[in-house]
Amino acid sequence: MTSKISCHCPNCNARIKAPIQLLGQWRPCPGCSKRFLVRIQPQQDAGPVLVADEPPQLPQVFAR
Image (cartoon, rainbow, N blue to C red; front, side, top):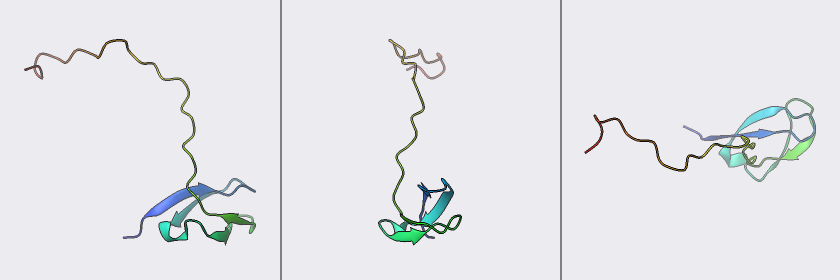
C-alpha cells in the first residue's frame, strides 16, 4: 500500500493527493496544468484552544 500526502496547488488551490514518492518533485497540477513543488502543507491553524487550569476529574469507575 502506497502512502499518500495531501497538498494544494499554489496557483488554483486544488486539493491534490499524491504518492509520498513525489515529495520534493515538480509536477503539473491536474486542475490548471501549472507546475508546482509537491510538499507537505503545514496544518491550518484551528484557532484558539481552551485549556483548563486543572485536568478533568475521571469518573469513579476509572479511578484507582
